Amino acid sequence: MTAESAELVEETPDIGEEALQQVSSLLQRLIPADTVEIEDIFGNQYRVRAVLPARRQVKVLRHLEKLMQISSTGIDMSEVRQMDVGNIAALFLSLAENDDVLDSLCAAFQEAHPKVVEAAHKAQPTEEKADVADLFPLEEVIGGLVPFFARLASKMMTMVGSMTGPNPAEA
Image (tube, rainbow, N blue to C red):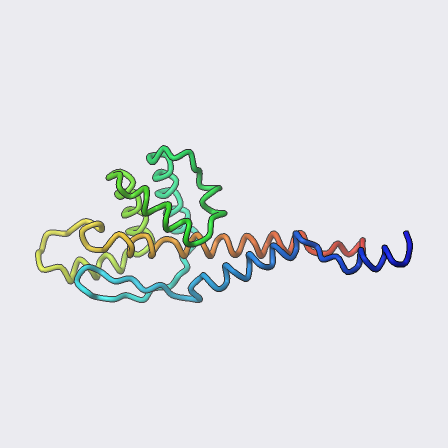
């Protein structure tokens, strides 16, 4: 290899690493740092943490896995986990026309935010407990779930990036 071609090789960026950094940076900008704001149909606003304990996170993911089976879109959860925040929200919104899908979204929301749902029940004018779909607009239900996917995707990108970083043996 000539000195000129060696310089060219050194100046050529690693496109894979650069792309990974760009995606990771994008996800960091899109992900709420610590909290999510949710508003019920009564105008009450709730600020909740955008993280869940692992056990509850798995339960939420199971509800959403069920959603994907119901929807018959051919999309599985591994594909959803790789989507950006906007695409996840758009997907859930398009699927929510099906009552069974809406029920799964609401069950996942109930699992993710039980205290918010309880507070909304207390705010409702009747004593009969309303369903999550009757207490929160659809965009709030979806908006209350999407950050968990975004955080998970961001963490996975960080982990993949650290595992695919420079190999010390090659340095």
